[in-house]
Image (cartoon, rainbow, N blue to C red):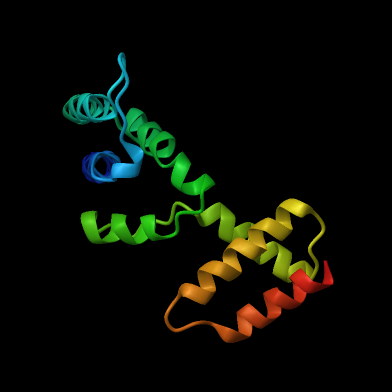
Amino acid sequence: MEDKKADLKKYHDLVIATIDYYLNTPSLNFKTNDFNTKSHFKNLRLIATDDFKKGRLTKLKRWFRDLTEMQVETKDFKFNEYLRETTGYDINIHQDFYKRIDKIIEKGKITSDNQFREINAYVDKLCQSEPADTNKIEKLNSLLLDY
């Protein structure tokens, strides 16, 4: 029971932080005659809080997965840091991406255009990290060149 309460709080915090991210990112906000993202996300905040109060953990987990889909797809690696700083939870929404990268490294070969793009995106991320992992960057660049 305590675990569920802790998970409820965790996922509520993560969902609210994600919604706030959308609300506070100007490039993600727009308004048309029949739709306003700010109003939409403010309404989602209320619904998420209601789900939290009603103990709907499965719903909150689904909300979090759905709301972070864009950050996963666009490889927004800074989003993990935002969540960590905002909520205090050490979440990695890119976990599956890193697993795929590790498998490619283990295999020692890129076998598809999609793998090439993912390795390329990962090299870009590593180059921007402090300190840069030069050994890993060199290894990945070698895989890219061999492809």
